[in-house]
Image 1 (cartoon, rainbow, N blue to C red):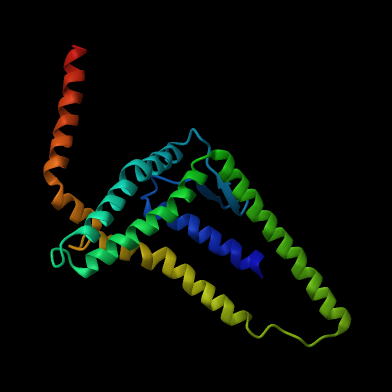
Image 2 (cartoon, rainbow, N blue to C red):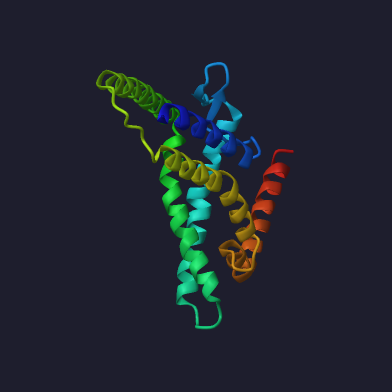
Length: 211
């Protein structure tokens, strides 16, 4: 049954990734005519934005989370809430876990391999299901998987949680006082403002030099 459920979940995940990025950053798209995933070309602007997102997450997001996690755990007791400490650790761990996937899909060849292998697994499952059904018919077995409906329900619930609930929870957590980014900005706002105006000054200087 995975060739049916897997295809549906895969399509939902692709649509959700595009929706969560406001259709501006993605590495896969769903072809309704072929009814299969298609990797984006390297020249597609959405794929270029996805690569920039992977680069930004590597050189900006992850270092900020690691630095803030270190500062929070080394801070004086009482200056930072316990929720902020746990949030910093979890955020750094999640970012560290997600980064390898971003690096993997940032290469067009890897996206093509992933799609090819996934659909080959679906075809293998389809052939396996046909073999099992024929085997049951030949042996006249009355065996039926009783837990199939339960497993399908759990898979649907997990997909719903990941695709819809998790993004909303992440957005809510990002704007609270316990957010690692909010804490980092508040504690290092002077340095950040200095860097911001330095970049603006550099850009303005380059523009004036070309006149």
